[in-house]
Amino acid sequence: MENRNWSMELTEDMSRLRTFFEHKLAEFCGSDPVNIPPRLWKSMTYSLQAGGKRIRPILCMKACEFFDLSLESCFPLALGLEIIHTASLVHDDLPSMDDDSLRRGMPTNHTVFGETLALLAGTSLFIYGLQIPLQQLPSQGFRPERVNSAVAALAIAAGPEGIHGGQTLDTDRQSQLDSDEFVWEIARFKTACLIRAALESGALLAGASKESLKTMSSFGTHLGLAFQIVDDILDVQSEASELGKTPGKDIIQKKRTFVSSFGLNSASELAVMESEKALKIAEKLGHEGLFFRQMALFLLERSH
Image (cartoon, rainbow, N blue to C red):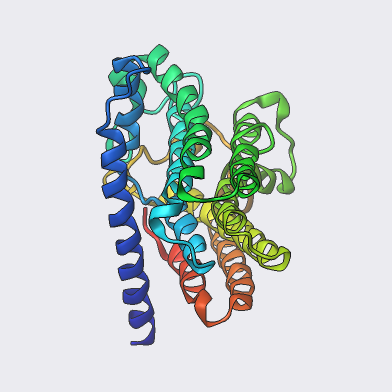
């Protein structure tokens, strides 16, 4: 009963945050930017509105709330995170990368708009994910130094020290190493970095203390690693209808994953280990950090 209670509480809070985000996202995507070619905007917003768990903006908004910021004021930052995450998915699905035809239960961007436009949409989204918070956060009353610090965290996670570095390790054969540590390196770059940035950027925008920032950063890293391990497990255990993307691609492409490196049982144990680390760190946040402790357990139990 206790597990059911915390699960219901977390589900309700996540639903509240996701509902707010989806409403604001729909407004954003429904706008008609005069300086963006219509077809490019259509391709960009197609992937943005394709659904998904919205874990990264939810974590960002909750971190902002933890430090007493309003959802309205921090939305541009949360939006920037989801835009960058979506950009990485558009590129990840391209024929030159994973060559996938299904994402979030819908046809991938390049299968709808063609490879060229999908590439341009993905690149545009990476840049737009930084542009939007830089343009919109100052009007919410945030000081320039806080805006710059928060957006810098997104830029680091989006660039060669983050997602692009992780994608290189994941896809470039000459960059790959035959060691157990290598799969951890991929996960730190490709997945954990943006989940960590979701929490870090919220703390930075709020002007949190160095100790609080360190706690959020460390929590995000272990949460992100657990997320990636579970993702690798789901790739071999789930159906397309449940997963929202083509399962079994990692095996077909002979990718280095936690399952291929350690086996299914050991990978499950590693996911528990990383979730427990995240849980222990979240305890430093006190009673107000209950959401983050629950999130560590929620991501471990997810099915898609």
